[in-house]
View 1 (cartoon, rainbow, N blue to C red):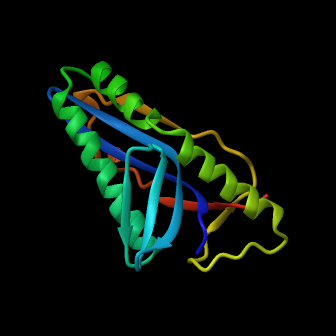
View 2: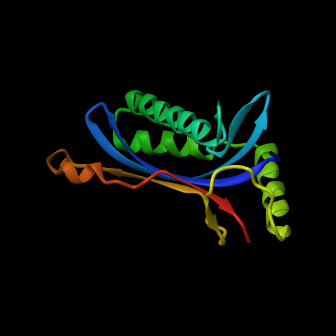
View 3: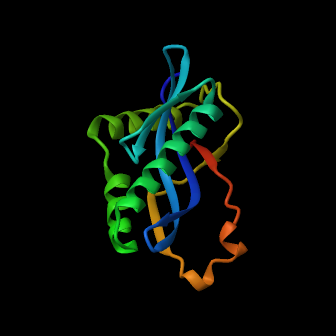
Length: 160
C-alpha cells in the first residue's frame, strides 16, 4: 500500500479540572503498510503515529492516542480556555514533510482513473474539506444523556 490520504472525524467528551468539553475533530492522516504493520501518520494533528494489524486497528490505536493526549491536556488546564488553546496547538502541530506526503498521495489518487487501494471500503470524499476542530464547553447543569451523542468515527478516502 502506498501512502493513502485519509480524512478522519470523531467527537469526544473530555473532562478537566472543573470543566467538561465536547471536542470534535476533522483531521488528516496518511496510511501506509510498513514493517509488517499498517501505520497511520498524523498530519492534523501531526504529532502522532500509530500502527495496527490493519487499517481499522491502526485507526483505533491512533484515535485512542488522540484521546489520551486530549485528557492529558485537560488535566493540565485550569479552565476550558486553556484547554482549547492547548488542544489547538496540538491539532496544528504538523511538519512540512507530513503535509507534503499527504498532498502527494492526494494528487496520486486524484489523478488516477481507478485508484489502487487495498483497504476497507471507505466513504469517498470528493471535496477538499479543511481540517479543523471545535471545543465547546459543556455547562455542568447541561450534562445529560444527549452528550453521549453518536457521531460515528469516520475514515474517508479522498477521490476527486
